[in-house]
Image (tube, rainbow, N blue to C red):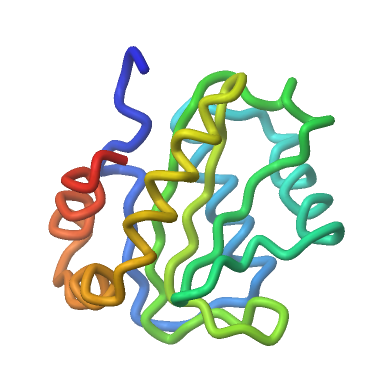
Length: 145
């Protein structure tokens, strides 16, 4: 990849909770502000969610668009948001919502790196303990995402 898919401005920590729709909207808004997607991407995320849940286990959800809506993606990027109050993701408890926009097949590589990071409970605990967006960004970046 020619540029970083994640910058410090795309990482947030909220002390409260959010609904699944609010969390997806924030993920889409961050990606749009980063210039990675068009305004149509939130709808694409909702379409994907109606078909199959993007809940991944270990308190992680990774909302992303459908293959049919690839034209809403301008370049690859991530958003990372931690909700300390949690998100009810279709009945599953979620703390981390990582929005993904992948140009071409790049999302597969990004997804696999995130899956590896979140497969380790120790790593998830470190991510939950991060005191600031900067610290959270450092931990995610160190994982090669």
